[in-house]
Image (cartoon, rainbow over all chains, first blue to last red; front, side, top):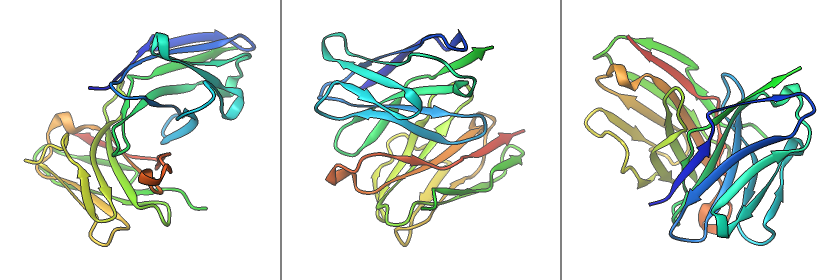
Length: 113
Length: 116
């Protein structure tokens, strides 16, 4: 069965500092991987996705993630945090042909001025 | 392009009462999903529709939860009777056609349910 582990339920960064959110997955088939962001009282918004091809994926709002098959990881980074990046971030893996998503537990990001 | 619409946004009920949530997906999206997001956790898929047929309902508590998408467009999710542990945000999502590689799911704002 597929699963997703996000290390750290809370991350605190200073404005302008690097944001690094960790995601490890398990999958019995080549994975499709996603990062979503959720702002308070809102639904989830897609940041980026990996399906096939280039392993470094660029998304919206300056975020990017790198698929590393050998490490079964898909960590999310942003070089310089902005106050507007304060939100909860979810990593997800697509499971099977039915397009079911299995989500990690989420990481809440706090940005300090 | 209009996004996924959900109503109501908030609902408070007492245990053993019934409640229904409504979702209207993005126009033209064949696939519709209902997720349950308990506080502090990631969303969990309850049921997936392809047009008006069920693709996956393996995690739907069928003794109390039901869902339908009769005309292949909008959908309702019902809980009857509700339990305290059903307190959560219920998210609806849609995608164009995952079978053709259009797999990105677009999420609505959710319905926040509190069972007292």
